[in-house]
Image (cartoon, rainbow, N blue to C red; front, side):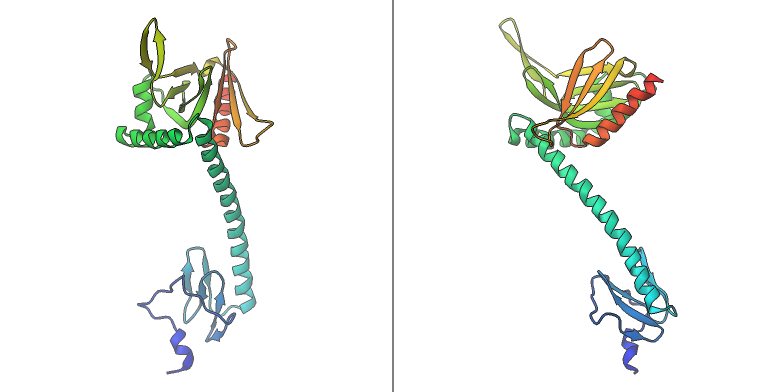
Length: 246
């Protein structure tokens, strides 16, 4: 057996991406071993080691290394973007849980809401059960957030459909009718043709605190905060406003 034969491709063997080869690229036959994040090898024929990365026999070693650097450069950029989005999302979730009067209650409430969504078949069904809808109306987006009220922030879900912007609290709230205490879900419904403005804003004291001010044509103001996905909410709410102003 020739020494390099142990590096030859075997039809029944697949390259293991978690194996690492040291030595910086020893030649073997027509290919090279290139060490990057995982082993990239080229033996008797092209081998696909990662879905996005492969080496071809017969090419110059410099070309192979350059192509690897190019791929890793693009991957690094995407990874950085994904990391930034992940950090933003983590920050939004943390801020969402901090917005309520009790961090623990907010966390438990959000878990309970997620369980409810799964049990009832998704936000689309909950939306139709909670609000009156027209036959052709479709739910576009749903966002976990809080609505600012005189009694404090109320945790719930903001729904954007093809016809309306609506909010419903996760749990019923108590209120007094004479001497009796009654319970009801806190709801807001604004038809899209009655939207006047969608204004994103950030606290001057704490940049992590972000709000969306909704103004109706009759000048009623609603302040939403603690969005888990704030940027998406701003984008789609402003898009809904613009489409109905044309």
